[in-house]
Picture 1 (tube, one colour):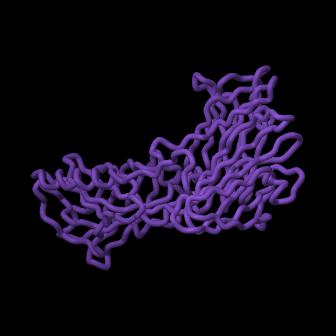
Picture 2 (cartoon, one colour):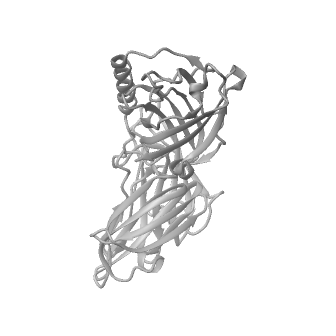
Amino acid sequence: MIEQIIIDRPIQVETPRRNTMRYLAYFLLCTALIAPAATAPALTPGTDVLVPAAGRVSTWITDLYIMNPGAEPTTVTVAWLVRGQANPNPAELTFTIGPGETLTLPDVILEDFGFAAGDGAFRVTADIEVVVNSRIYSAQDSETFGQGFEGTPIGLATASGGRTDIVGLSSNSQFRTNVYACAGPDGATLDMALVAPDGTEIATKTKSLQAWMPFLKRIDQLMASGDFDDGTLRVTVRDGSAVVGASKVDSTSSDPTTLEGSVSASGTTDVNGIYQFAIYDSLSYSTGGNLVVEGGAVEALDGTYTNWDKLDGSGDSECTWQFLFGWGLAIPASLEDLEDGVTFSDDHSNFGLGVLTYTVVMEIRDNLYVTGTIDAVGSDFPAGDDGCNGTFPQLVIYGGKMPVE
């Protein structure tokens, strides 16, 4: 892990050798951006896993599978989350699974939980990582047909600021499509947009879910979609977290197909984390800092600021101080405000200097990359340092999320 070293007071620095600074800036940025992204392959093991849809109604039943890939026994708790409500105290069952063993729970809603009918989802927790899968199917005579819903670790659910795309939805004479979701511990607010294959918007809907609340609704009843073919549902999580997807059903045979939601291009659906950034001037001189995002909001912005582009009449820098910046920012700050630009002032008068007022614009892309700009205006600097007064040329910001150790 790279640590950003930040001075606790302004320091005066000499104009550096440009090639050295350019190399250092390039090295720091590239090192920050090689952080491995979390990926979400099928059947990802986890210690807190959601199966987002399950049910027992008419001829339809659900089987649940939990596999222990570890070398030690594990205790797992299976919670039944009832659809359409918060589930702070769900019905729970506890099992022990030996190393390398798979717990098979056929018709789990009836045979284990004792419910003759029900719609909802499962939450599986364990003391070591387990693999969870399920099948919901119609059993008539000796024939069955149905679909699978894989278990998704809650850490890979689409979180605040993230987006998931579900491709292949249809609502017409041949197919109907149900949209499903299951919220995490803080609930979720989902901004949904249905778009046609050419990218034009068909309909939108915002849906709020309570903590651990499963949801399922037919797309044409969820929003004013009308008939459409092969649409894509773009779901942005405004706050909280959720596993989101769809089920496409043949209207004649009732044969269903699970349509999984995508992860973001970065392979991570969680905007939270520590982002390291570099601040560049016109000749690639660089300072930098850290942006900390928690709960979908800015909890800290710390960095160092030097601007060699503010020149005097002879071409030398007017202000040769390097400043700590960020303590004047009111936190928490929303990511929307940061994207539009936040303005704050840092007072350096305790060090015999003046005040710098910053306007920082930062956008987080794919929950991994940071781009932006920083503007500064100096005031009240005394004689001898009055070159730090006035407007500084704009600098640019590039950075990336730090790896989780």
